[in-house]
Amino acid sequence: MYGLGLFHIQMLIKEKVVCVTASFLLVFSFVSLACVSTNQVEEKGKSPGLEITNTPPAGNNIFQSDLNTVMLPSVSGLVSKINPAVASIATDSLDKGLFFNFTKEGAGTGIVISSNGYVVTNYHVVKDADEIVVNLPNGDSHDAQIVGGDRITDLAVIKIDVQGLPIARFGDSDGLAVGDWIIALGNALALKGGPTVTLGIVSALGRTLQTEQGTLYDLIQTDAAINSGNSGGPLVNLTGKVIGINTAILRQGQAQGIGFAISSSIARPIIDSLIEHGHVTRPLIGMAGANVTSASARQLGLNVTEGVIVTRLLENGPASYAGIRIGDVLTKMDGISTPDMSTFLGILWTYSVGDVVQLELIREEKVHFVNIKLARRPPD
Image 1 (cartoon, rainbow, N blue to C red):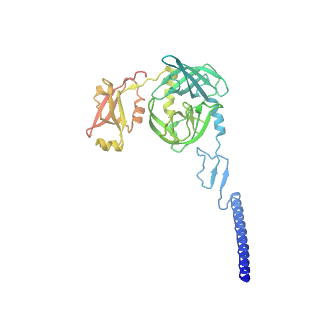
Image 2: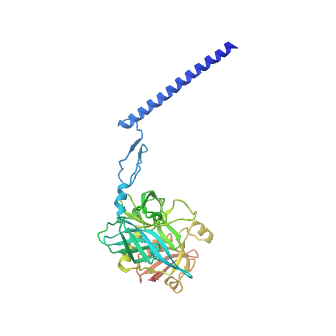
Image 3: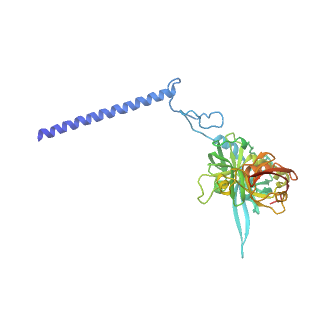
């Protein structure tokens, strides 16, 4: 028994020595490999390793396509450039009760677009306000007056009496592509300490969204966090140009990480008209429509899978007068394809009051052409 026990002890000692030796060799091999990999990164011309750098690549890409290079992006310089033109907006509106009146406070964000005090924001931020105060990044506060607002695009321009302001400049949203990096700035949750900055990508383009204020068209969708109070703030590309104006987020558990912005290509002519005239003059065609989808085409027995189906007509309006019927599918305007309502309205709003447009439509599987003289859309 004693000899057997000693044998077991000797075997255990040998196993431990083997394990320790093996562990030492494994660690030594790992360290050697790590040294080789490090040398490969440092020495050009050898097998590529993993390179970490703060040098930004050319173009609009933060992450280079080289799988061996991982970029550590910083947008601090860009934020410093745009921040002086991003203001917070505080509003007070009077709610009349049965026995008492109540003051309702609101908050939003504005973009300074001229050195003499014009600020653009969302229409829903200021539409019911009795008092508007613009708080500038330098700490100054100024009372503001509404210059004009447009419910359809949810845009408004307000004015403060001050000169020499730093301004934001618009870029071309038509050049955006899904996947482009963008930055959202705004007075999120009315928090003190300056604008909140979030980074994301363009998730989709040309979105249509139903909101409490109405239907918004041709929106930029992004996963950059947009919270309450961000409304009216800038969506900026990596050159520091404003390519969108934050306007909406999905709420009540509908989705996470989805925000929307009005594209600069839509916003700029609206802003110019509000500054010049105080309102936007649009042509009226006198109809409402919905997008044709593959599902609705099957359900309605249509022989097309895109276009605008007429859902409602204004009595004695231009479309009704010209002979348009509910259920007609509009496919072209003056020869330009209208695959959806967003495109249809974008084309329509390039015309002036009194212009005549030709609509191509499908009715009972036959193609028809109708000429419509556009009227003046009444102010909202």
